[in-house]
Length: 279
Ligand SMILES: [Zn+2]
Image (tube, rainbow, N blue to C red; front, top):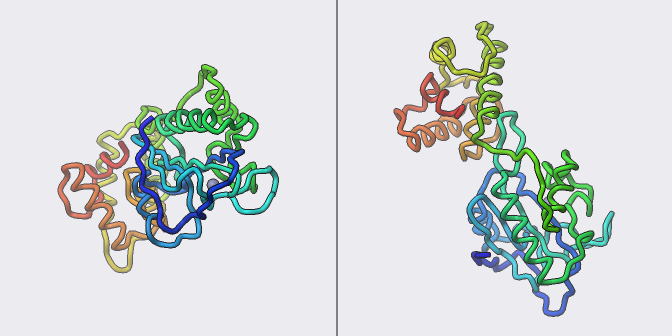
């Protein structure tokens, strides 16, 4: 498979004789792309790293296979894997409407393809393909820790088995419906506006979004409504701290989103911006 190399200058230990025995799977734990991660680790000391970053579109290698990446520690914890005897793959994430991070089916499929190549190349036994969680009990990759079956399926795919499963899709309709329902529920809680929780963004929703539009002012607007908007801005690529407070960073993220989506760039979250954000 095609692998883009953007090797870090600092975040790795040079080695010329290590034996690769394990492959450790991770998730990035934030919304970002493989290339973003490569540039994050490129020149500045971060005290951490990984060999490969995978997203929906590509694989970027940051540490050479022969060198040691800093991803699961130097000691033996719950598995025999440690930095010095393993390779590492980091999967990039998106944010779901409930605020949790997840890994798309596309990213996972690309990680499977890459892992298969590495397993073959270095003759890594399938039982030595582990989660970061298996090594140190860190909740990583979280979607494969909370859902043990998904991890089992991942390993089946590595062995060439056909797995039938419901794959996460950030654009599928049921997720969209859940997002709208979550927004409706939040509006009812914050403003007691009595919206029907039907998952459809109709005229009544538009009216309430206009009535309770969000914008940056001092003191800032602070409520659950702001939180839902921040979560959805992050889902669309912003990297906001979800703090329930509509400050300047949130305003800027709204403007960026509006610009990207052909909306009036005013930093106000009214009906049109809300409708677009929930998509
Ligand atoms: Zn990890």
